[in-house]
Length: 60
Image 1 (tube, rainbow, N blue to C red):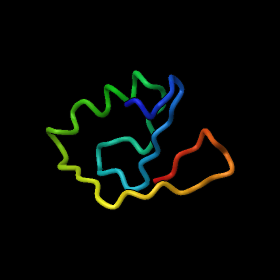
Image 2: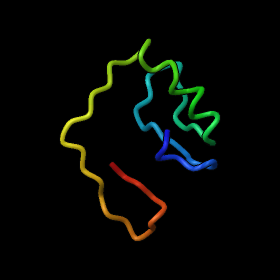
Image 3: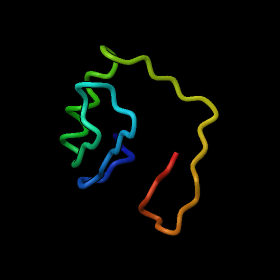
């Protein structure tokens, strides 16, 4: 959650049925993500952050 600003946006291109494709705002993101351990097993490995022209944009 620390990666997101108050107005952060998470776009989920391949969201499962019943889940939103886009979540906006830090509070909404927190509400959306707090249930992840119940629904998803998420493991990140070899994470690569791609450089962008916009220093406020993160693509991983």
